[in-house]
Length: 146
Image 1 (cartoon, helix red, strand yellow):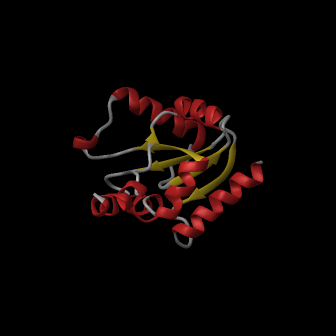
Image 2 (image 1 turned 90 degrees about the vertical axis):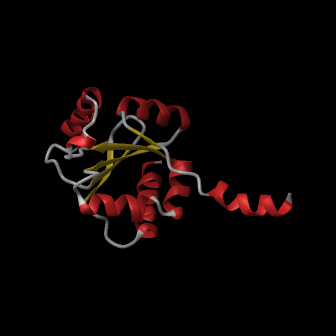
Image 3 (image 1 turned 30 degrees about the vertical axis):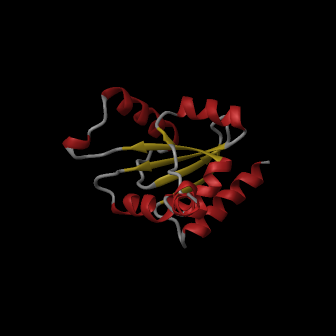
């Protein structure tokens, strides 16, 4: 039994990050839990830097630990392949988020917001440095708002 727990325990720590797809839902959750919002615009099936950002930054343990305690994560995805097309309602939601927070249509584009949706910081493209540096930049943006 102890061996089984030792084998399973590390995987319990590696919980996946939960991404929302709706800013209204994210604002409610952020207000309720006293968190900030990190909104990422991505092209999951065509944008190389977007794919790399999710793999190297958002899947990094340092980022996930910080996000778990401080952030509500929102992904506005704009896939191009027909097989990956979003339902019409989700596309409308993503378009509305883009109109408000990413009118130039940059990818990847990441925005740190307070719980009410006020922009605190933006990252255009793949962030400089590594996941730990990006995590520190996000954390600094959060603390500057407090």
